[in-house]
Amino acid sequence: EISCSLVGSEMCKETELKVSWKVVPAATSYQIYRSTAKDGDYQNIKTINSVGTSSWTDGSVKTGKTYYYKIKTVVKTQNGEQTSGFSNVKSAKAVPAKTTLKAKASDAKNVKLTWSKVKGASGYEIYRSNSKDGKCSKVKTISKGSTTSYKNGKLKKSTTYYYKIRAYRKVNGKKVYGSYSSVVSVKQKQNKSKKRYPGGMIIIHPAGVFLRFYENSGKIYSKVGFYDKII
Image (cartoon, rainbow, N blue to C red; front, side, top):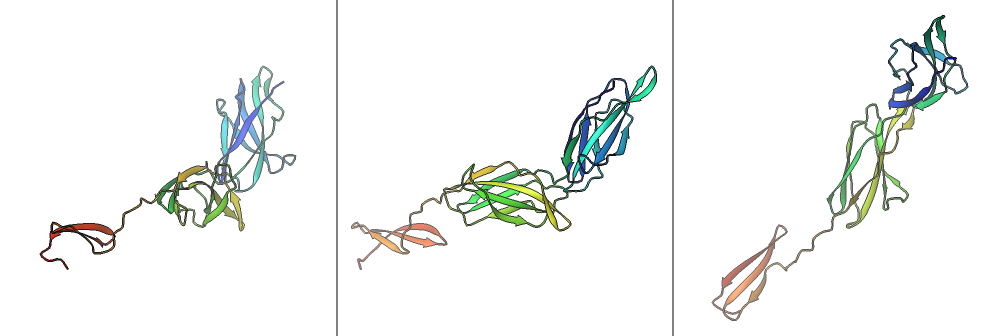
């Protein structure tokens, strides 16, 4: 009896699925069958004649649809070629790829998020939480697939925020989502306290020396001088 085993089917990108199997000794070809339902009608969509090959990429799938695969193996024997029965069934769904997210505090109240572009994506959804395992809320929907950055503002200083993102592709007016990115965290900066002086404040020393503090364009300056007359 000839046996064959389908190892798996996995997404490569939003319009491709990879099918893989165990190589069978003495095999002359592998016949790949596909259906859109587990117990549906399977059609032979590809025959692989390269005996050392153990995978094939299906580039004729539609985003958001689940596909089911099984294979048959053709083996050369003393009595001629024989074909095995069907292998086990594996399924996969074509969705946008997973992106990689980075976060950096740009100042005390803003975080800059950047991520890798997902080919074929219509946009992205960004989620935020105040704790690592807490509930995330959507803070922004990016409606352009070419956009790879976003500035999240009005945040609390000295607070740690957690972010994740996922790509989506619109199919017939509906969003098909990819997997969430890994969660990244960032702690907001704390404003350094600055000593403020009233503009034009003067400290007079009995020896006739004065020290004047004044502010210009947000910076504090001091000036030392002598006076001839006490007012």
